Length: 274
Image (cartoon, rainbow, N blue to C red):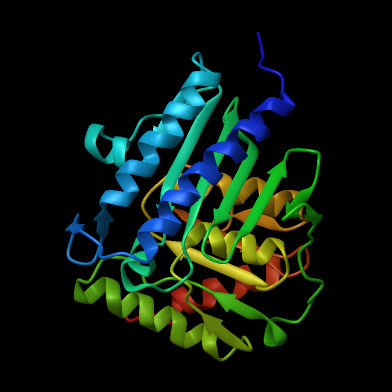
């Protein structure tokens, strides 16, 4: 039997995000104990503490639901997404920002039902911004409705992207060549260091377009995806085609710029030396 949406889903997710947010806020101003997952990919004690806190809170209320989380999936191998109600959690998106005391960090909690993003909560506890979205019910920032920008010109658009955590020469060259091509077509570029907050930035009109290739996993996009869609924004594959929550690549735009943005991305790929 298909699971129906319940208002309790959002309420419990917001409570979980706020509890984790308190832990992040406390840790943000203290000395960080950092581990390296890779050369530049960091994980802190706070990541682990927050994930445990969020999952325990969700499991208490929804024992029959499934769970995919950044730290647990990294340890156990990424779980596959099924039709069951599944909570997909990034306990601390923007870990590098957290370690450096740069205030773009957030908790991201998404619920998929039959693989479709249905509930999203993204909370930045440092600047106290809570983004929420529920399929068919709109998107909100601190309780106020938000909507994507109405910018229709690429040249007047603010673009966000990230360089990612891979530092081999061919990947870095591909990344910088792509950015180099795009810089001639947009107003300016931002790299805030959080995929979830970039999606919310497009949702509330701070950003007009965003793409990222090779991010960590579905936990980076599950919360922001539904918030963006409910704000009238579009989420899609940067190479064209439909957004796949498990693909580790994403592009987003307001409701008007998708085709122009895809053309620019395609041209940027064509500019790469092979």
